[in-house]
Image (cartoon, helix red, strand yellow):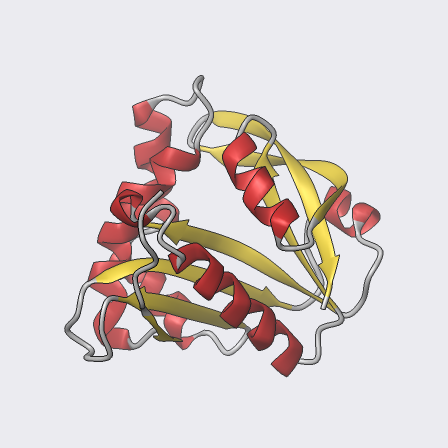
Length: 184
């Protein structure tokens, strides 16, 4: 395990969108199941994790995008990010599974692989939980691929538990996710 490396956690700025898209393109495939193809992953990256989409996410008042960087200066390297989405879930399976309202989604939680085990994900999670509370959510939920045991263990350590299942589209492939939830 790496030694804990101090990071600064802050809201993303419009100037971060290119770095966010690069980080997302690097980290998203790490969370995909073994059967996921590079082509499907790239289609998802191009349509959901592009600089243009991150520009929209950063400006969206229903979203909170947080970044972790190695130092306090805005030009320091981004090493992780989370995205929260306020409001009721649009997925029927998710709505049926959740038990706490109002809720907020932890839509994305990714850390550069060179910083796994260094405390970055925990710092991002703690700040994300605080942001959810600040938006008056009583619960937080997320979807995680059923084959991503490492991510599930991380979320369970932070109080999330499986409450249901849903599907997640990656390119032309429909993946199976668990729906996890926790009280805030």
